[in-house]
Length: 146
Image (cartoon, rainbow, N blue to C red; front, top):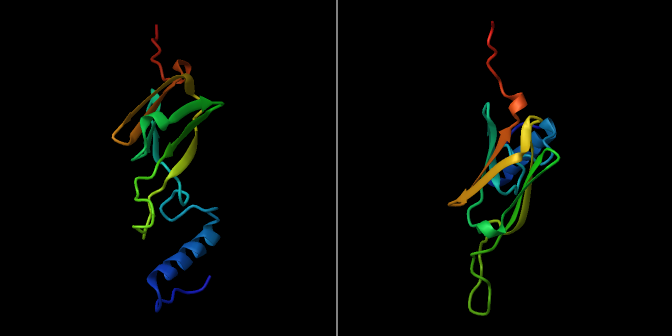
């Protein structure tokens, strides 16, 4: 890996740095920010003693176009986001279109103690909140000593 030399286009230097980091850490397409390039929707995943919480940020997605399934320990979030950008025609040109449009699919591995029979999902203001309860047998319980 060579040394960092700045003297040209900043963006090409940042891309070169990203490629060097990818090679060094063998990230297989993961960016410095932690998610694969072009990954949609962005997700936050966490857990408590009672549940696994998944929050997916999907602005511009119609709730009727979302599909949430759980199968064999995998939570799958799929759907489609349509474009709100102007279409190029004889009277106008599109100069930039950076917002993702089209079909998407995210697959999230659930822990073994997640209960696929107890899943709740809600969608509001472009945020999907999925709660997967944990099995009762995996929760801590108080034992009375006699």
